Length: 287
Image 1: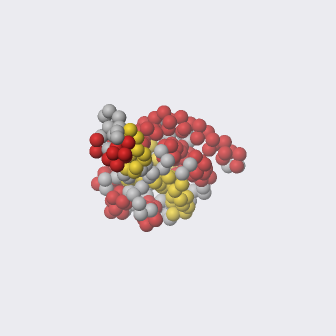
Image 2: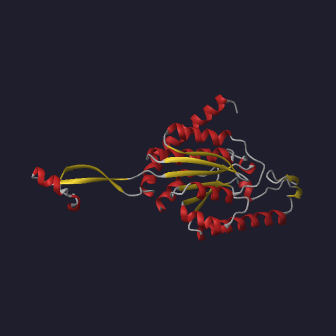
Image 3: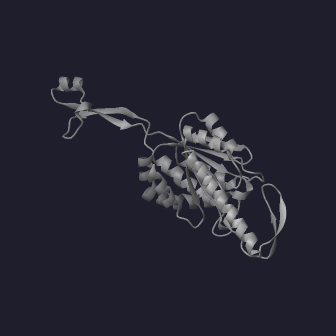
C-alpha cells in the first residue's frame, strides 16, 4: 500500500472504532479493569452520606466544621497487544483479511485504554518476536500501532506463540492486560500459557476465516501451506475427506479452549462477520 492509502485506511478504522468504543466499550472497560489502588486527591467539606472514616480530623479541628479526604482510583494500567504476523494471518475469503480485522479490534481496545489514560504497547511475532512498540499513551500512539499492524511484512513461518509469551513475561514484569491475536493454527506450550496467565490478565482471540474450519467441494485442488511450504493434492469432492478435515479442526479448537480454560485465561473466536464489539463487551462484563 502507498502512504496515502495507509493513511486513508487508518482514518477509516479510527472513525468506525471510535464511535463503537465511546458508545459501547469504554465504560465497560473502565468497570472491568479497575486501578491498582487509591490515592489522595483533595480535602473538601463533609457532605451528607460521606464515609465518616474519611474525615480529616486536623482540618476539621482547624476550621470548626467537618472535612473529608477525597480519594481517587489509581487507574493507570498497561495493555499489551500481541499480534501473530505469520502468513496465515494475511488471508481472508469474504469481507476482509484477518490482519485488517485484527487492526480494527486493536483500535477499539487501544482507544478504550487511551480513554482511561492507560498505556498501550504492541508485540508482533511469528516464529520469533519481530517488532515491539513500547507502551505509551495517547491517540497518536494508537494510530501508529494500527498503521504498524496494517503495513508490516507478514512472515512465511509457523507462529511461535511461546516466543511471544516468554518475551511478554521477561520484559513486562508488572501485571498487564494481554490480548493475544492469532489463528492458533500452530501448537503452543500449555504449561507456558498457564504461567503467563498467572503473571498477566490474558485473553486469546482466535481470528479465523470460515474456510479455516471447513473446505468446500472444488474437486481436485492443490494446497500449499504458506507457513511451512508443504504441498499436497487433495480430492475435495470426497465427503469423507471434508468430514475428517472439519472434525480435526473442531477437535483442535476444543483442545485450545480447554488449554486456555485450565490456564485460567480467557478465549474467544472472531471472524469477519462477527460483532466483535459485543464479544469484547461480554468479556469485559465477565471480568
